[in-house]
Image 1: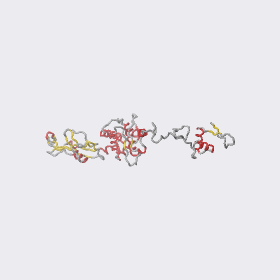
Image 2 (image 1 turned 135 degrees about the horizontal axis):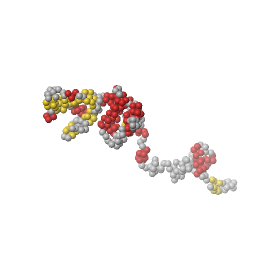
Image 3 (image 1 turned 180 degrees about the vertical axis):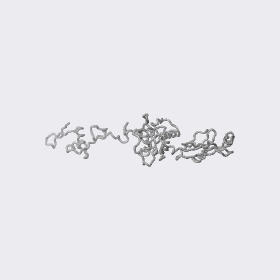
Image 4 (image 1 turned 45 degrees about the vertical axis):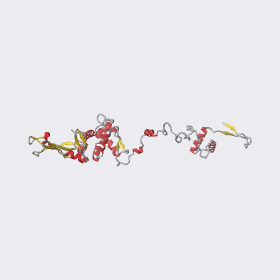
Length: 334
């Protein structure tokens, strides 16, 4: 578009002043960014309002973004005090952060020597508690690692399902060497077909897991030393010894020791009128567990040597302790 200027000072000739199009200005702006702007382009930008020697065209105060101009950043950031309905600059920043997820920096493990946690999949805190206790035993953890991939069909059983022994090794390795602050036990839970939304009994879960590992170790090593790593760590022997107060002899059954993998201890409680008061923690509970029970009155014991009902005492006798004693809370009193 052209318009005629004053004739003064031009020697009588008409001076045409051209108004550059947006395409011309945008092209000149790109050349300015690339460093290939010539004198004509500089003049064009100057006459278009760039000024200041910056080589870029200024946008108007109401510009909300021009897609035809690569140098225009108007509209990307809202004015001070303003927000967007959606996207990065929306007002509800907390919801945006929730969609983005946790900051990866927060998930990074501080150091390999720092213990890692286990993600709760819903109601799997009982599983996590058992796994953390087992993982904390270095020799037990090493034995689990020795159950190599070949021993569990590369992570699958004969029916094609994921093998929990294989997944337990993977999970222990993640807890020990992983770069995150917590490990995800989802694959291990899937291998056991656990209902992650249902709370189960941690004591029962530990029994089942140790029984399974015993079987896997037996299949792997037969009668070798490693085949008994579960027993070596947790199996002890005990018996109920009943002693006659008349003749002082113990019953024949008192010599029959049985295996145990856990010791159930009472805690302070009153159940069915039976009061049990324990104030000394673990040692007090152990003393109560090993205390003698008197059999007298209507509860007299029939001594096989005296062949009569006599007063007697009965108590738990520990014949052999495991390397690690598994203490559990006694939750039922009969």
